[in-house]
Length: 333
Image (tube, rainbow, N blue to C red; front, side):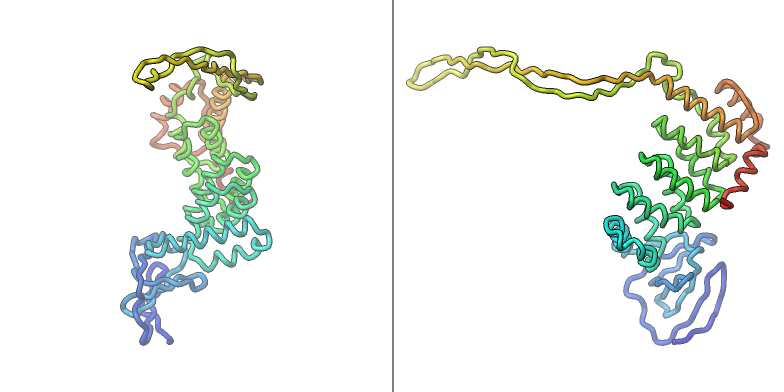
């Protein structure tokens, strides 16, 4: 079943096969650089993906050249990867073999499965495993995006730190762009996390977005507040009222009935914590100004001043020296 190389282009090798049947179910493999689509049955072969086409030809593609795979079997493959991660999260003895098990499934199916488990798994241990596996696939933009989202949205600080650490080790210079997308979030805490992360992952595209943002919600509303109630509510009967019931038609006459109906009230006890929103707003404003100063080397007091500066600086803008130095250090830690 030997073959000979016929063509090599952009990481793709064509290999002829002898007397092999065509695949029963074809997938569509999309390549990153050329936009080429190779149709056939893919199988893993180390650092390559071998695609058996309907011409009895294997197209050998570097795994790093694959953008994504459209597959009629994709739901089953993604489900398989999800199950492997979920089982490893529940059973410690399965964690050591998780990496080798996932390696048998192409990253085009593994990464969506990992991203889904990271977003929905309740177990901290399972999410740590997912972060580790995504970090191992950091060359893929889908893995980067999932880690960025976790670094902004995860409600466990330790896991946010895990994702940030993984992103620093990966060191992709475009990481800051994904944090820039998160600046559109409505939650001020999540926006502030995304803004602060740009100090670690500088990106010049973020400067214009930060400069164009208006005042944080509530900045001019000194009366804005939030509160939380911690306590208990107990229902009790406070009294009785007499109400008229339905007429009794038995015997051909009318007879009104009276019913004693309870009056139910609620007894509440506990503590109400009332918090002014002003602190949250001031903190977001402080972080935004600090990051803008770090990225641009400029310092202004108002949103209008930042916007006026950016309008003039945008055509020739480059990151400040300190930000460039920080960007160059990524991946070296």
